[in-house]
Length: 197
Length: 94
Image (cartoon, rainbow over all chains, first blue to last red; front, side, top):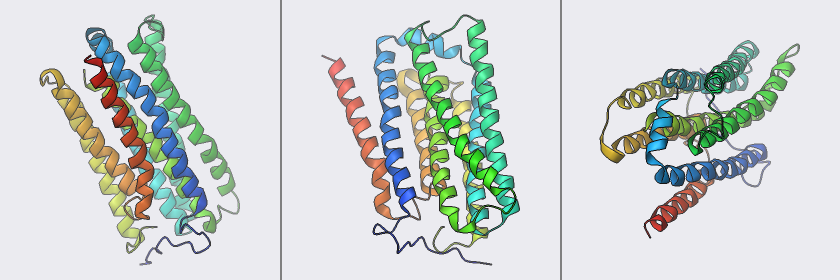
């Protein structure tokens, strides 16, 4: 039973690994980025109550729920991969990070199925302001998922062969912060778009 | 990472949070099939989402174990968001 070291970084004046601090600054800006869309959504909804309710009921609740579960699972495996690399367990690290990556792919596939179903019914961003909001919010969210998968693929690539350096586990924690944030955005988008109408 | 926790305890904690998030997802989807007045569904949906978000931020994103001031990176932007939404909603009444 090894005890986890307290998060002390004497090298840094702030006591926090600077990559991680930078990620938190970025996340703060990201919260405001998505807040803009959600704020606009609230105002538009109050102007078009009936149309928003009608349009929201056309969304596929089942696929939305599955995607929520997929993202939550990916957050778990992301967190577990950080624990694994902190312990220097390369095998588990690779396994959990690969699973996280696969969940990302799964999420994007399901999102594509949803989009193409809407397209085939002639529903596009210009259909109405609900769908304009829907496409822009879920679209930017999906772009964030892809954005997280790029460094993830890089870290997976680096973990081949000699393995990912254990002393760089903060990079995995920082990537994890971003990934959990993307999950967090979906936690709000899902009820906002699919459930509350 | 988490001060004072063994890796085994930390993994168990993550698993517990994962299960809680799944249960809350099932709950929020289940509740959405019933109608609770004009704003009832919105309030329930937001309450459950905030609970889920708090679990993710505090445990998965380590805010519970990290320096307390890191929490302001969440609190400040959310405060501004709420202020703007509140202002817009109030302005609409005039």
